[in-house]
Length: 73
View 1: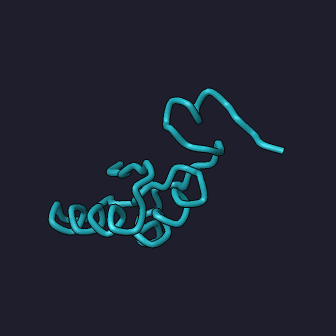
View 2: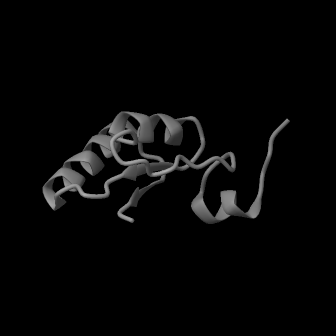
């Protein structure tokens, strides 16, 4: 059984599941894993430097080509 909602179409994801952008936890590996599983991965980047945010985003892109977001609070 598949669950599909309008948010799936909006975010171009398969299932209506989103990773909370939890600082200190939601880094590239977790974010990419959620996106690869069909949900919406979110990097938790509050209090991170622009350089670190850029590096984490590049890591996610190296792990998946699926959609993800960046939570900056």
